Image (cartoon, rainbow, N blue to C red; front, side, top):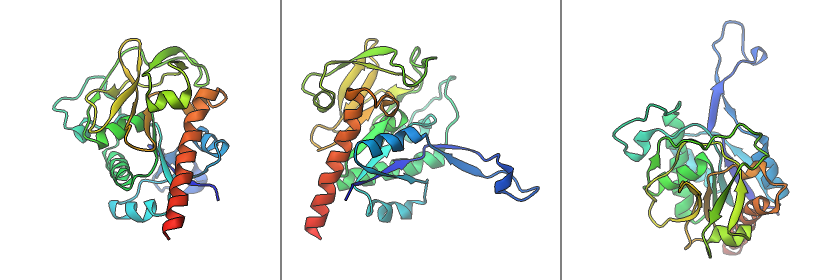
Length: 248
């Protein structure tokens, strides 16, 4: 059986489709998630399932059914989540309730040893879940080109887990963020940096698979190095599923 990979819906938006509500009823919030995440996991051999933001008490039973977790991109994390005393003027819209769900989900999944892949905001969430902090604004990291077009190179740390997965020490990536990892969370190491020093990937080298990447690898899966990240996630999740079946 293919491993079941949960994918968070980090973006919420106002529902505008009139056919989904009665006349005069106010618009309700909707989940928004790019299909690219789901296709990347499916192409890697996993079975993706979309996770809505749920109350804290629903997190444990949700994780009981998952073999791995992918934290997707989305809005800025609220500075309150990592104890920042000030808010940068360039800080974008935040969703504190959504932050709380994803941080609880990440911490509980981490505690269970589930394979974890964070993408863009998801990488930042993994860092904050481990007690790290963020740069609330960095310049020059939001491209105008399509997401399928790499626009700058990063350096992969030699002998890192990410390096072993992508198979190189220089990698072309895309860039759609303006926040980035500042202080590393407990047990985490930098796995890649941009030429300006911005952290582009983090990992926990003591874990089978705990990786956060700042770029949107899910839109670059036609390139082998980026596709390999999702294959590594699914492979680790498959090992989790096998372990659980043997223990049952």
